[in-house]
Image (cartoon, rainbow, N blue to C red):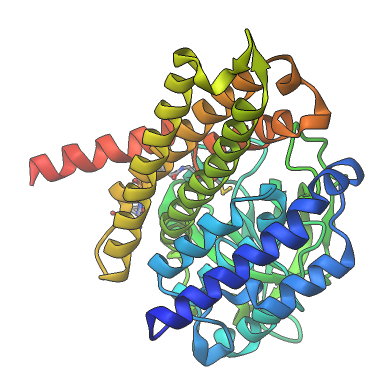
Amino acid sequence: MIRDQETLNLLLDTISRFVRERLVPNEARVAETDRIPDELVSEMKALGLFGLSIPEEHGGMGLTMEEEVLATFEIGHTSPCFRSLFATNNGIGGQGIVIDGTPEQKAHYLPKLVTGELIGSFALTEPDSGSDAASLRTTAIRDTSGDGDFYVLNGTKRYITNAPEAGIFTVMARTDPAKKGADGISAFIVERGAPGLSLGQPDEKMGHKGSHTCDVIFEDCRVPAANLIGATEGIGFKTAMKVLDKGRINIAAISVGVAERMLEDALRYACERKQFGKPIAEFQLIQAMLADSKAEIYAARCMVLDAARRRDQGLDVGTEASCAKMFASEMCGRVADRAVQIFGGAGYLSEYGIERFYRDVRLFRLFEGTTQIQQLVIARNMIRNHAG
Ligand code: COS
């Protein structure tokens, strides 16, 4: 937690300058090469971006959720692929340990996530289990027959962000195959070098070039029993859902940040581009698009901040996280579409960069739960509360 407003402002200003001076000028090159240069990764590490929300006692900045989303708004002013690299450490790849890990697990892994020495990754989705996460089939069977206490993992995880770079994976697997739903699922920390763990070919994606996903395959992969998160079987699905509650607020925040960037670009273009003898920004049909985007971004920003503050107060934010994720990611899609429209034909050309954002932000409506899953979560919670 940042203790005073001045220090928080300094952090946000430092991030903002880093984004504008170092990341924005490299966006196009990263997209072309599908690779973030090592020197930029080193600078991100030096700034502490890999440990923004990891507790201070483990070396991180320990930002509150509100502080973290303010930082994420700034980080959104460039290609979201940069955030993808360090966001799993602060989010889905590290938070399972932060929220439910044992003191030993926290002490061992969190300091390495903070420095970026380890990249954390979150392995929930499988080829036949996406939105229906509780139907996952990867198994983790305890084996104490040999020279130690292990779980043996078998199965395949799919679309795993940062898997090619990851040093550790938070893996949800079924420790009790007799139980078909959420009850039989446990979460594990699996190290990259674990025998029996292998990676698939990098996925070819529509956007987010520079951020990588691939399959993670477990074939009789032996994981020490000490790496069972929380040292308790059967709580892994709930760990994953708690991790996603936080993650969804952050996806909402990055949606706001990127939407702000696209609107800035569209406004600049509208003020420069002349047609019919004057800047197109002077035409009311262009103004309507600018104004709609501005108002929707503002609404999403308020939602994200409110959800973040509620989480900081220790409230259950399942509904608010899903509302913010759904609204902000859909809003971002509309802002991207209007931005391309304002750019006109230029919006369709790679050289102007706006089509890259258009492709990148399509992912926001899909990952960490589709819009339809957010609708399901929100409506289910409403009905449950109504029933008392
Ligand atoms: N926090 C804590 N516990 C939660 C929770 C949350 N946010 N959401 C659900 N749980 C608990 C439930 O309370 C239930 O426990 P009890 O049986 O003890 O009450 C258990 O988890 C199972 O929940 P539920 O019955 O709601 O599970 P379902 O299988 O019906 O549905 C959904 C869960 C669909 C919401 C879940 O599978 C989901 O979020 N799917 C999308 C997955 C996703 O986002 N994938 C992206 C991958 S990461 S990029």
